[in-house]
Length: 141
Image (cartoon, rainbow, N blue to C red; front, side, top):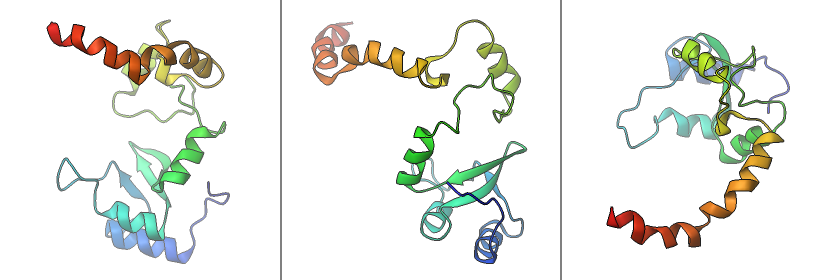
């Protein structure tokens, strides 16, 4: 993850070329087809794997390389908990926050260690052998 949020000249120039002007990418980007990521991702992966972005009016970083994304997702510095005041809310932010405070926490919106504990409880039931064993009953319906 970038330690310094200031942009060097190369990154600033690349983002200007990709966006046609601003030094921040607007995210999500427009896709030319629903089946492929925007072509700008390939350029970003090779030349600017951490790009500053605007996510529904909030400052964000667009991380484009697999290993970097994996490292970010494993980092305790980032959170999946939408009840945190610093969590960037999208257009449905009010709905998300209302759901998060309803007393029914979503498994995917939990941080470690609670997420890890609950995941361990259900992992066995979703292993390939168990899911395959359920296939005939599911297909009968």
